[in-house]
Length: 127
Image (cartoon, rainbow, N blue to C red):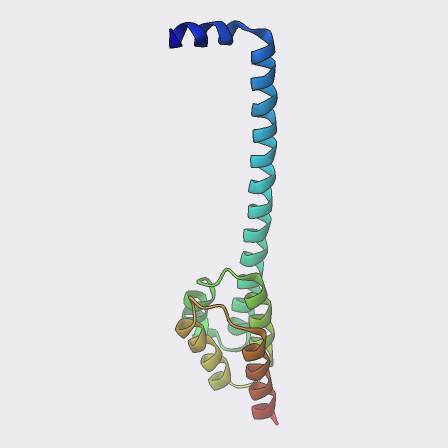
């Protein structure tokens, strides 16, 4: 009986039109979500590369450490602040300290307050 109902529905033009419309809406939503996710991932990769470039431009020997720790981060806000933190690091030791702190906190989301404190410490140590 169930298969008879399915057979009848599969031939009904109204049912087929409703199914087609539902599939189109589902496809559009899926594409939009996929595009948004792709854009987010692209931005994250861009900031990751920018952070790595800052490190390598000043201290090429830290490239492996930078790649390992920076590519583990996918939070855009954290990556944006990281580029600033690395740019403010004036010595190899400061930059290495920032990179090592990433490994320690790779699974935690840092608050804005702790980021401000780190920037303040970097600025103070530059004086």
